[in-house]
Image (cartoon, rainbow, N blue to C red; front, top):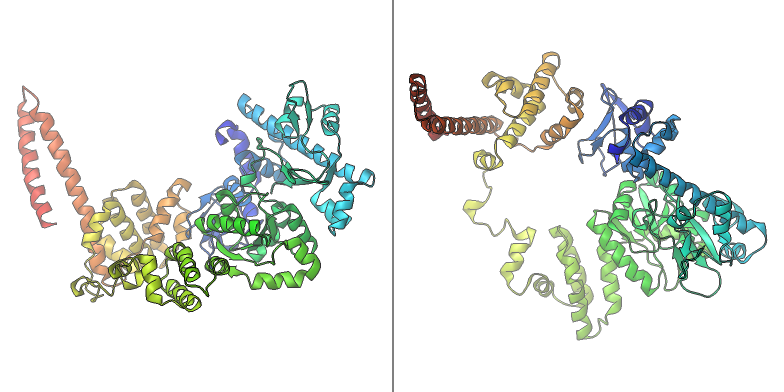
Length: 613
């Protein structure tokens, strides 16, 4: 999308939105030399590895590798596309985006999205006014659910009257194009194709607002009996329900502070909990959680609490959500509610403190699945015990920690009165060797004595380094040079910066050389300040390298040998190619014959050098 924006606009946006100011809206930063540091907002960490360069106007995390400028940062933090990020930053800086647009395609796309945002906003105001114009079933419904006028206003709730074309006629009188009203998903084409009718009728309305504060769609709940009970806007250029979370626009700041987010099923659950004093809550827009929503949750919080309805359908939805969140690396817990009770009802009846206590007692993912399996099977019967163990086998296979696995095996064995060994066999097969092979806790125990790392000081890293290649050897060497000036001086006495092969590695080596001229110790931030943005990922790779701490002298000699060998092999190939080229010539000049002899002499020397490696 950025390719369709005028470069002048992008540069103006960046200049008017200083990256320190932008990042500080979300992350507390502290000055550290010529840069700023803080805890990374994209992954959990206790020691700051998130660096923001004031001079270069970009950020980089040396923990997870996230990197970019102010625009990219807002896109990542707010989970919005490039156009929305440009609009948001433009609003912050008082820049009119339309004044800078030049591409016809860009103008058309921005115009359509802006029109859809305007139409949705106008529709939301229309529904809201309907709710308070006269006493109606919509207002009665919200009052009966325990909401006050302040909460109704906070969420912009509304009411669609039981009329076929009320909204459509209103929007047309406001001057909006019929095709765009249809594109916004607010009306449906008649089967006779001679007109349109309102999508939402006789429903209470829940505007869906993105984190940038724009109305992107609507949800409607039927007042009387009818199907579907809940109706959402269709997919539009500004609305994809799998990419958004209801209520996040209001709860995002609280969630960032608490590092915890409560996920519920419905609109009223979000609103009810919010009114009850629990603000770190969102809903999944009536569908099973998607991976996109999972990544969004992970970006905002360290811990995700699932609080779906206590009925059977709610439990099924919970399991689907758990699996998606687990796949994207979220830390998950589940609140258990009584059958038929939803979070909104629970808070209204028992209060905020009771729900907070439920959060404290929320079950981790594996425990919740085990408990469900336990409840679904009668463990007083042999058949029930077998089904219980078999139903959770696939869960236990996903556990990576041997300690965690053993703890759960013991727990299940106690509950089902089945031996731990029998459960292990069920998980890994009847062949005992398979269990030993697959379980991390047995890997070292059953290796041959000759294959164990019993002598930690007799390190011979040359073989694995050869497999990695010269690039990895150079990175490891630079890591040693970065961490210790004494090692830097020792390496510099043997090889120069120019002896590195990769151009960026040469530059980084030169930067370290310059920094060590005036500093006994250098930091990653000091090096970062001397590099271009596109070179930072290479520095990140070097910083993350793990090199042997024992027998370091042997290690760096091996690294240099790998680099030297690569140069010899490269030169060998060059000589072979040049010899082939000259030998193909029919009439060789005396100089070319002399050149062949020189190349052959060099080739013999190279072969001898390679034999020594």
